Image (cartoon, rainbow, N blue to C red; front, side, top):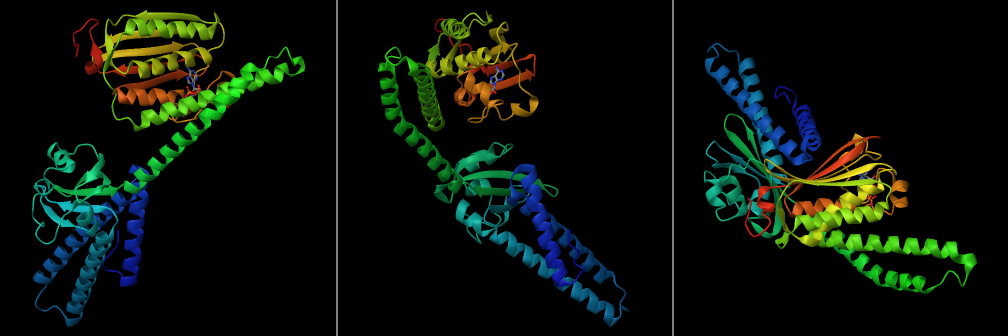
Length: 422
Ligand code: ADP
């Protein structure tokens, strides 16, 4: 924190350092440097205002006999404090993120230029207005009305229909609040370019790969026995590339989808299929058990749920050495139903768990490739579960095995037959 008693250049340096520290802290704590800067700026303003109050009080109560020298010192300090306040206001005014200071009744006290641009606030008449009323009809007003407990992500900017915002509301002082809105339109555009690129490359690769694969199938290794191992390897690799392309296309589709068409997913049949597929992949090397106690179907996309649930079972087979066992469970819990796959396989060290659903993230690349993996399976699982508002939980002990569980909420459950079970 700066001391208003130091010289002006020292003061500015200390202020810049404090704002810099706020940026770093904001970035470290929440990945939001501007939030850190704004918080430090607010703290600085509060501190300076307190000092001004003390200074004024001291001047008022100073004995009439205060020497001219003391009086001059008072005046110099007051000027420095006023100048620091102006600097802070100017700095906050230029922040690229929208900053709005609100009082205890969520009335607007102050806002910066970005708030005019992104939130459509106008000075001077919006000062003192209720922010909720001022933004009435927007997603942001609804969020404020509901208490703004969690940050709002990807909201349309009330001041610019073509911009999207991440917004958070931070309490400070006694009852005041600071609203911060970060423009994520550029980030969203880059993300869209990345998605389009991956989808286009995958589409372009699909046709040549199909042709290569087709010709490889036509070649008979018996005609050229010396090339049989080469042909075999080429077939395996072209199949693997084909699978990567198909998985990338599936991911592209899931990423652009915001919801699924709700259909009944008959779980008894789906579980039997998943088990059969796991048995086919295992080829008798594992003991595969199905324990289904939840007499409930799911509401969602049959195709996507099949892909996600069978992915977890096939992973269990691929990452469990021969002789191990795999248990597929479907059970009711207090707040929904859980599908889980437990194995007695290699397990996963705790340090990898958080990143497992990232594209192409593998604990061991060689083990994944040898077992025919594309590195995209768990990414697909996560996207499918998100679209069904379900959560994935991973528990694992290296050397002992893993359990992957999918928790479905009550609104996704359907009684076998016709009734809704929620
Ligand atoms: P892959 O195609 O490589 O299996 P996934 O996305 O399905 O890709 O899984 C990512 C990584 O997570 C795998 O490479 C593997 O290291 C690890 N993994 C997934 N399931 C299991 C499991 N049941 N046991 C141990 N490791 C697993």
